[in-house]
Picture (cartoon, helix red, strand yellow):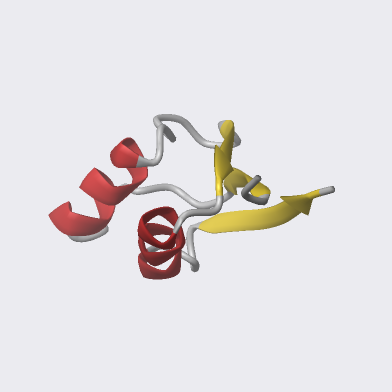
Length: 61
């Protein structure tokens, strides 16, 4: 079974590049302080890495 991570958007996507805005939407984060629990696949981790300055990531045990 894969690890799960909790991603919370802590900074706004306003005034960011279109690519970063689309990455937030792809992660399921549409509003500030929105939280999603997802499996830590290489694809998800790559997306998180691109918007790491806008989100907070926690590992779920």
